[in-house]
Length: 285
Image (cartoon, rainbow, N blue to C red):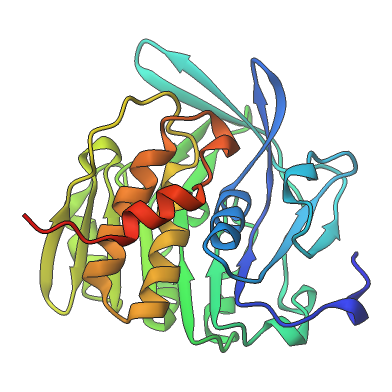
């Protein structure tokens, strides 16, 4: 693990597994914490990561970001296979769990804390044990299961665990794929938490807040690769929400920034300073 005595306070703490994604181009860095941490840094924040990965994990893209890395035999490793019926996802390896004791004390009260599980590596009780100003949750990793062959599928979130997490969350971001397009479930979850944002790919996002519901449409872009767009959305949403305390503005900003990310492949989709400036400008028609 990183020498903890050297750690300084951060503005944005991302907790969850990095992923070693098997792609036609080789093993590439992925996972929500990777995309969200790089996005938060691009937005000008001091960022820290608590993760678990095996030896040889492709972490070079995260150079400059302090990482507490729990030793693990393997990194969490996914493979996405395109088929005629859509994407088939295989989990080849799962890294070690991340526990409260792995999170440095100096980071436990970071202004923005992002719980970002991708393979059930976090216990939902973490939500009530961290004291950041804004606790953001992307529950994807609590809403998927895999069989003995590693075949991943969407699954219902355990009711007790979801209730515990949703009550303590400042904001929740998830995709329609996470809930297998069960919009009734989304409505139910929206009543259990303060702010819930559902991303719908090229259709944009729907924000549930204070008993209201509003849709945000992205600018039209030529899609090259949508990998990580939802994670970029989540980080942009949490950061903008923290700065403005305005969920509507946060959703508008995140929708536009995530739309631009799909014009490039993988981590190259992390926002540029020019894109950030463009999306900060409110266009009135």
